[in-house]
Image (tube, rainbow, N blue to C red; front, side, top):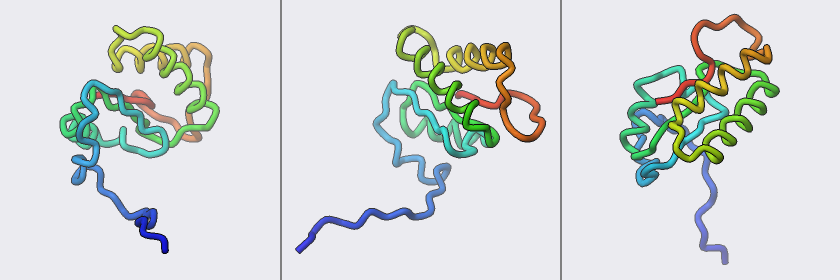
Length: 117
């Protein structure tokens, strides 16, 4: 008899249920598959509830090539430069990708594609 609870995928409003991230003190959270970055207030709520050093997310849909490069570069900066803030890492990644002219998405965007609080 299987007594384990089934894996469930239920709707989650992370702004209202940010407490699920509690206990991530000093860690950096990266949301790479959703538009969490479109709502700065939600990001700040998640950061406060989790105790994370930073919350990083995209504001818009991005091409896979952009996400792949952005995240490899982001993790490199966060791991290799332990004293670097998450915000500075995001800033450096955005500058590098802009310099390389990596396409972000299918529509014109204003402001940063990846954001951090």
